Image (tube, rainbow, N blue to C red; front, side, top):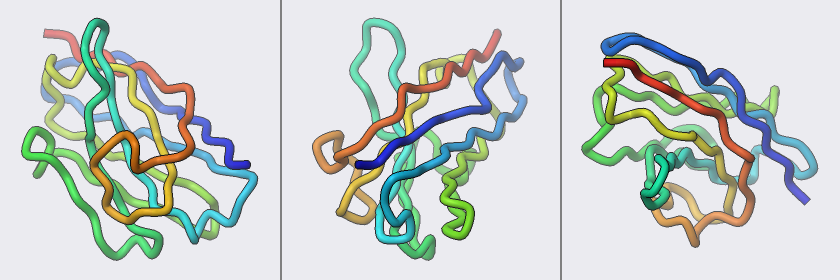
Length: 123
């Protein structure tokens, strides 16, 4: 019922920046809470950022706070993640997700997932 497609990943050097995008379709985007997660090979998927339906409130874990910024454009049905001061530890596949609960940080709080976009930070 909701389709999510990520884009914008790539290779960047330590200290560089990338901007990820997520295009949504199939349901009214403005009614959904959105989030970003990431997963490195052999590791569990972890929470990166969340934003409520209005785009007014955001939430980040300490690992990215001050470096990453989540935002959304409801008229364009799009979600964004601006990543600055990137570190090798940020290397992972990044996924956007949609769900009914605002500012959720757990995987089971989201119902829809994209297929991911690769971000690689070289050291």
